[in-house]
Image (cartoon, rainbow, N blue to C red; front, side, top):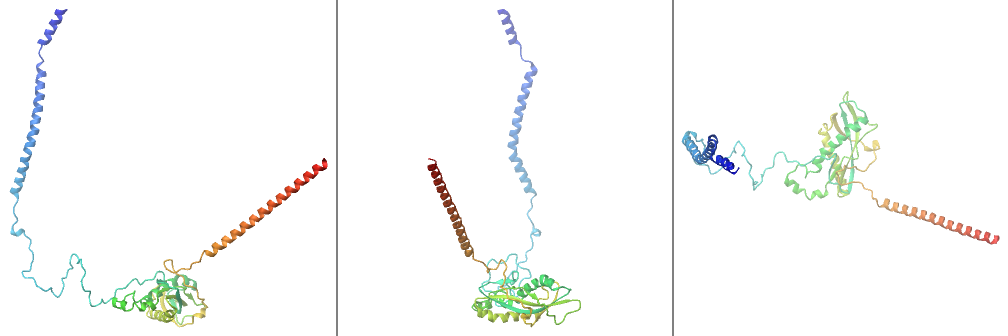
Length: 344
């Protein structure tokens, strides 16, 4: 057995590897080595390739000639003083610093401030106020009744009346130059501070227009508005000025476009008491600074007193009921005791 094992081992050692396996391993090793060499050569040749491309681009580059240079119109000797007439085209960007001196001549059309009322109210509203009454005719292009005029026409017309007289009352805020504003600073203390279209205008019941075109309707209206100032003397003085301003605007036709159905608005001199219109306190919109407020203190005090009275009455009732129950208990106990003694 031992000799047989030795013989078989000797045979294994003496057998060489097949030739095909050796060749395959050599081929794989050669391929790996060739791949490594190819990658290394690629990295080594990359700078050279890049340099060659740059050199080729330089060979194709040509310096620009005189024909490629744009022409620039430059004055050889510029003038020391600017020309009298400015350039026809504005500068691309305005100057960052304003001019040192403003223009000495004001513009033809003065700059106006915000002279539009807020639903018929404008300015400030001090404690002193006065109602200005006037009358006017309003002619309409369509046939309308008094109720429709009251609801559809007069609200817009009242706003237009207030807006039309704002430049006359608030000259410092509605379009005068800075010099005029400075001159009127002290006078502003004795001028109208605010205006409201309320009380609302009402159509006269039994007053007819002087004239009306065929197919149109016309109504005579009792107009009222409220002005506000710091003192009553100013109100007495400015009331006539307000009426005159309204008459001027109506005569000039400034209010004929206040509403689409209006043909004309004409000032008329009629006693406002003909319509028996009672004076009502002026109403202001939500944005105005003056409003009617009711103090809650009386309601709080009254509620506290009422609560105290109710608590007192309830307590007295409870106490009376308790006393009555105690008396009943005592009486019942004495009766039981007397009955017991009688039985004994």
